[in-house]
Length: 398
Length: 221
Image (tube, rainbow over all chains, first blue to last red):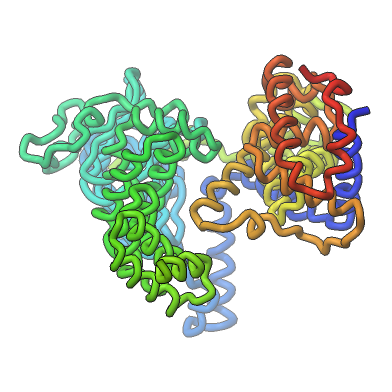
């Protein structure tokens, strides 16, 4: 028998005895069962009976404890909507109907629209748009959880203003985002999702997903404004990556970040490029841009990673991610100024010692002898036992 | 405003206890087990976990080594299994399907570990602490050395090596677990073995195994 197989058997036997002693399967088992429960009973579908129980508990508490102490027991209260509408009832708007919620949010239904309020919680609401158009303005609060569903599509909202239209006959979804950001996903397909940042417009129909710069706002929602809205306005700032505006998104395939999460950086890069790196860099979050730059780097497209990191710094100045981007720009370009920037922005940051060492190395490699010696002296003062200490001593001795 | 009577467009799903009361026997019948999982039946989930947790834990341990995040990786495998239950085409091949899922989760874990290492500038040792007290016995030196060598291999090579030599999978099983052809898996294994032997030269604890290891003994290309 192969000696490697023999080695493997010995290693496996030791591992098995360790695993037996270690246990640790309970945590995974409990999490699994919890997930099964969640799948069997989605949280947002249990509104009516749970609200009823909550109301009864509240009433009993008021009787026994008194209103003065009620906040202890009933701090999170579900939103209230005006006019009063029962959960689950279909609203047929023969004329425009404004729905006002107690968190300050408002959903204006255009004439001819049908909608259902499925759930009201303390943090938001779940509204189904069965057909027609709604203008939505959600008030942003520390914890906001609003979702609107139109056909197979879900719009997750934290605080924003947009027009949503859904035509079940044409299977056409459109969303004009005027303020804030939303995430639009397709039910039943884990990777079909788009993060939108205002002003943008998303249309989903038989031809696919199309994301573009949103056109001018209309005064009031109309039965089917999506079909008449034009994009983009001529006066708007031109996009750096114009191809991304008109090009259909290949959203229903697999997103670049899902591919990157699987470690398939080449495919992730191709997917990101298909969506337009410029567009992604404009609308992604800071942490997404860090991951995008990493995807570029690991797929052998360092120069595009540099562009993404530069955009991150422009969009999110002063943040932790911006400082990290400076450090990574130093790593990718070898430019000493980026390590210096990191040290200026985060003198006591997690990467400060490493940045100080790399600054010294970069200066030496670029031939800036005096600056390298100064950086080496500074390094030894601050980090006498640091990993670059030997290099600092050598630079000073040369 | 016109408000219609109660809509039945989206009927509320049945509660879990009701689902459980529906009652299904799962022992031995994988088709029924899979059907139960798809319905979100807690009894099916418990039976599924009970039957397969050892396989998943062992496979992850072979590939990842003594990773402190092993329970998290295991949890991830089962959650992925739940999300993908609708895609199980052959319930009778559930074991093979789950092993594939475990292998791919482990590979994702390895890649993510590598990414974290790059981002946080950590050395491998920081990310690879054993979760239990390691007793310094003779065999354990070989165990630690083996994973030090595997830490220097890419995710694909590491995985095929671990499944073949540590978990003892046959080549056909290995090809199935990695979802690739027999020829591909042989090629990967040959490459992985060469890489392992090259890096292992620096590990005194593995010298005994390397000196006696003759490639001609193997069924590899």
